[in-house]
Length: 230
Ligand SMILES: [Zn+2]
Image 1 (tube, protein in one colour):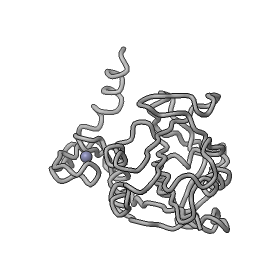
Image 2 (tube, rainbow, N blue to C red):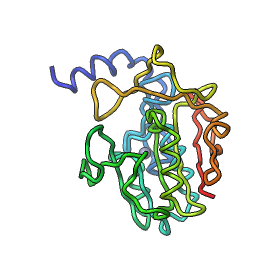
Image 3 (cartoon, rainbow, N blue to C red):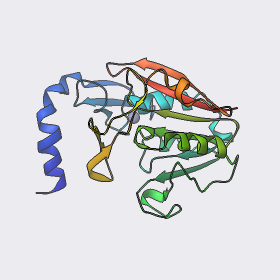
Image 4 (cartoon, protein in one colour):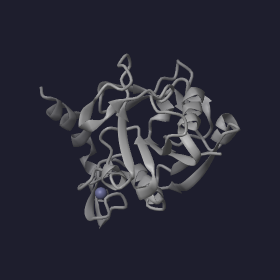
């Protein structure tokens, strides 16, 4: 059976009852009047028909529009993000993917290149903005990832990110595995971290401070996190 038919049977057909939540409105990501098609009770599979954005990308887009993107050098940790139309207006815009065992710098889909957030190929203080959506909860050495963020960002630079909201921050015990869907892996990808409102107490560093830039919003109580290089 083709992947598309499998996906239809497994993920779309059982969720058609949520289509009643479909709305016509302006998408905050692409800025166009669009159908926001609903296939889930929460916002994760409630997507703009035109750009594919769901709530977490719309929230990120709203924060990005507050910045002078034309002045900023940007890295997004996603090769196929619905933010790419907006971020294309940045001074420079590099997209990356991650695949275990692939050498950082290896070219990938849609002009992206392989990057490991715990050992980026970028020079110290060479970026103004990093954007990631539901990536950091999958990084086992999250402290190393944030240290790399602090290394490559210029002073005042930002890492704007989303993670699935949780009650409190903890490394998930191996006996409670949680897999998220992954466009690069049909088996899904293991979530290593729960990240909650107490994240700054766990991850703040002398050179990187975390706070919540936007939200919570929606049934899923989504927020946008901001890590600022001091
Ligand atoms: Zn859109």
